[in-house]
Amino acid sequence: SPVDMPPSPLSSAWQSFMDASEIEATVAAFDSLREACGVPSGSHGQAVLDAILDATSSGTGVPQRLKSLMAALSKSFGARPSLGGAAAPRVLISGAGPVGLRAAVEAALMGQCVTVVEARAVFSRVNILMLWQCTADDLFAYGAKAFYPRFTNRHIGDSPLHLGTREIQLVLLKNALLLGVAFAYGTELVALQPPAAADGACWRCWALRASSTETHQTSGGVLSFKPNKAGDYERGAGQGLCNLQQTSQLDPAFLREPEAAPPEGGFCVEVDALLLAEGERSSSCVKLGFTKNVDRFSTAIGLVLNLEREAEPHKELRSFTVRPIDPTGKQLAAAGVGFEFAEYLQGETHYIVITIKKAALIDKGVLRADLPSAELLTAANLDEDALMRLARQVATIVGLPESTPFCDVHPAKLFDFSSRARCAAPFRVLGVKGAGPGRGSALAVDLEAQPYLRREETAFFERARAEAEAAVARCDAEIAELTEAIERSAATLTSLTESLGGAVDAMAGRVATLGAQKAKAQELMHRESSGVQDDEWGDDDALVGGEALPSLEEQAAQRRREYGVAAAGAAAGEAA
Image 1 (cartoon, one colour):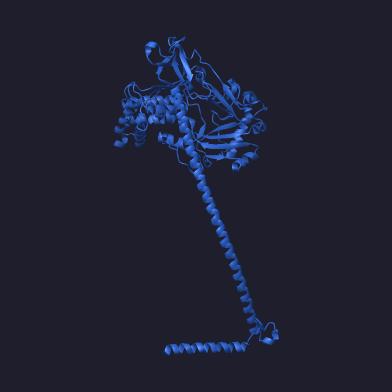
Image 2: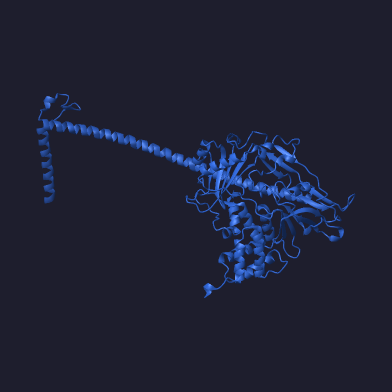
């Protein structure tokens, strides 16, 4: 029967591709998917996507969600300006973190021929990121929900939007592969060469097998710290007390002469543009002469915890944030864990990050001494056992049982984010000197040296300023609207208060009147029931408004007369 039929090679290839969770397995599964879809060898970009889309759309056993994913990717091509065709720009991206992978997807959607090199051969980052709404929407559009069914771009209660860094990388890697991007993991960029006179306009980038794939991120121990950002920086004139700068010169071993011999054992990628996404410690930026700045702030230390997430007897927590004024924050403060902000996020692990105060680390014995910033977070100044005790205390207060085991990789780590490194200029222009001494040699010049690029930069800043001013205007309008609403509410409240006050006064007067009437009625009842004559009450009690009160007999006679007149009037009316 159809139920017992084995899955088709195409559906099996798709399933393996969707299930893959590491780099090597993902690339191997995609090679099988290309073969199952009949993608021609050497194809890139839209040609790869179209071949997979055609095979998937007409194939049997492929889930509808995957057909929808392919259709959405195909549709995205129409939303970008196309730079494809026979002369499609060739782009090399060095670095396959979230930034490099997202850039690869965008460049491929514009029809460019994209190659990515990355030194690491595994997903080394285990941290989880809180996402802006626009970032969550972007990942959702590229099938994050298909790859991770628990992902959502909608807020559930107070739970923040989030996704793990390795999950973000995996989503973008799979999208980039479907868009025909070529990858070389375990390799690093080692040299650039400008075109020789006879080669036209072809630049060559050389890559080698990475000498080491070990970083502070791939190491799982608590004693592996990030390098100190300020190590190669110095304070220059006019930079202030909080700013440092790193200046560097072109490295001739990196930016080689056109006729120089290629690096031994390297492979060549011909490019029209090079995008560096190597992170703030990028060595390529230094070798190409980029000027980098470091902005320093007050001491800021983060503590990151990763605990295994599995079926547990306790009720699952939802992701949440913690401030010192929150109940959990007060518990942390009472336990001597001074902090500024904390997050608990659920992903592949129980992930906790807390901006902990240096004084708390010293008081808990995690840091042996209060040393200068360059020596503070070092293996020599850290008590690992004290750190793990603190980690367990924080995890328990957050709500995890003491039996929850720590992960083998990155169980607890401290990091310093008191500074921010950035390039002073976003890019440089590579060229070849056309005349004079050194004619034909490679050059790298800043943006300001090119009039066209300077104009484009000015136009970019003008657009950014206009967008910022529009955003400020929208905020001002919203503030004015809220202020007006607050004033209207205050006026309404004042009016209601005044009305309520008048009603209270009227009710008080009415109560007083009723009280007086009640007292008078009780007085008359008492007189009638006691049988005491009027004059026995005294002259004052027999007077109302200075006139004598009639006796009870006189009052009864008066009522009988009034009733008689009324009855006679009624009888006359009936006779008429």
